[in-house]
Length: 485
Image (cartoon, rainbow, N blue to C red; front, top):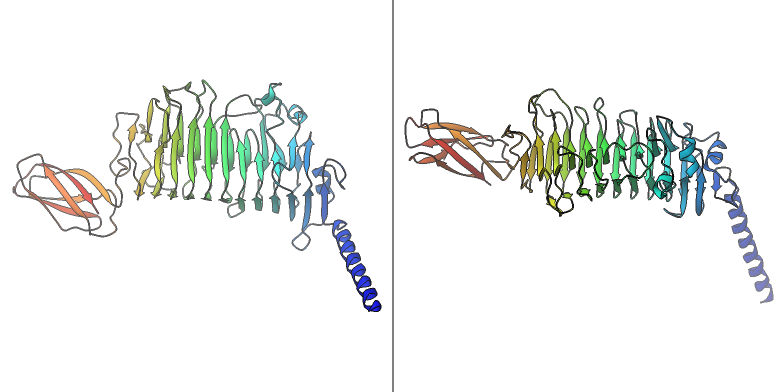
C-alpha cells in the first residue's frame, strides 16, 4: 500500500512537471510574441513585427496583445509580411491607441496616415482587440485640431489578401478600415466586429469583401482632426474596377449632427463601375440626422445611395437587398435637404432589387424632399436606377425636377405582384400593353377602365404583355389599368 502511494506521488509530480515544462515551452516559442505596456517580451507592436523574419504558410506567428492600452506616437506597419495573427484578450481590453503626439507628428501630411498598415500582406488576422485612431485625437477633447488636409485612419489594406477581422473593434477619423488600390479576387472578411469613423467606416475598392454580423458606422458631429468630406458607413468607391461586396446580418449606420454642413450622409454609397455586385442580406441600413441646421437644400441624406455613373440606360451594376430594413430619420422640423431610404442624383445606371424588408420613416419631419425614394433626373439623359421590389413597396416617391420618373425605371411601385399604367387605343379596338416588369407567370388579373363610354376586356396574357380590347371598333380611348397577382 505504501509503495502504491509513492508511485502515485511520483506520477503526479511527473505530470505536473510536464505541464509546467509544456507551458514554459509554449511561452518561449519563437512564433509567439507577447506585447503589453510592461512585463511582456515586447512593449511595442512594431518591435514585435520587426522581429519576424521567416513567417510563411508553415510558419505562422502570433503577436499576442495582453490587457492594457498600448499608446503609440508612430504608425505601425507589417511591411508586407504575411502569416501573422494579431490576437488580444477582447475589444476594449487589448487596445492599440494612437497618442495625441501621433496626430501632432503627422500634420500636415496632405496624405493618408494609418495607425496600422497591412498593405501587401496576406493571411493576416486581427482578433479580439481594438485598433483606435480616434479616441486620442486632441480635437475631440477640446484640444488643438490637427491636419485638416490629413487623412487620419485606422487600418489600411492596399493590395492585401486573406485579411480576417474577427470580434475586433476599429476606430478612425477619416477612414476606419479601407483600401485605395487592390487586386480583383483578393479577399477581406469582417466577422462580428465594430467599425467606426467619421468619413468612411469601410471603404472598398477592388477586393472581394464579406461582412458578417458587424456594426459599421460613420458618425460625423464635427470637432475632429483630419479630413471629413462625407459620412458613409460603407463606400464602394471604385468607378473603374469591378467590386463584389456581400453583407449579412449587419447594422450600417450613417449619422451627422454637425450644423450648417452640406456633405452627403449615407449608410451605403455605391459609385461603383459596370459589372459590380452588392448583396445585402438581413441587415439594417440607417441614415440619421441629429441637427435641423442642414446646410443645403440639395444635400443628399439617404440610407442607400446608388450612384454608379454610366452613359446609357442599360443597367450595368446590381444591388440586391434581401430581408433588410431601410430607415431614414431626422429631428422634427428639419427644413432642408433630401432625406430618403433610396436617393440618387445625376446620370446613373444601376439595377436595385429589393426582396422583403421595408422602408421606414423612423421619426422626425421636414426636409426639402422626404420620401422612401428621392430622385433627381438631369439633362444628361434621365438615366434612373431600375428598382424592382418583391414583397415590399416604395410607399412614397418624390422627384426634384419637373421631369417625370420613367415608368420602366422610376415609377418604382411596380412589383412582381402589382403593376399599373396607362395606354391609348390607336384608332382600333385592340391595343397591346407591355408590362413594366415581367411577371413570374400568367396567373394575374387585370382591371381596366376607359375615359369614354366603352367596354373593355382582356385577352392574350403573357408574362410580358397582355391585350386590351374595346367594344368600339375605332377606339381612341385612354385606358387606366392595374394588374394584381
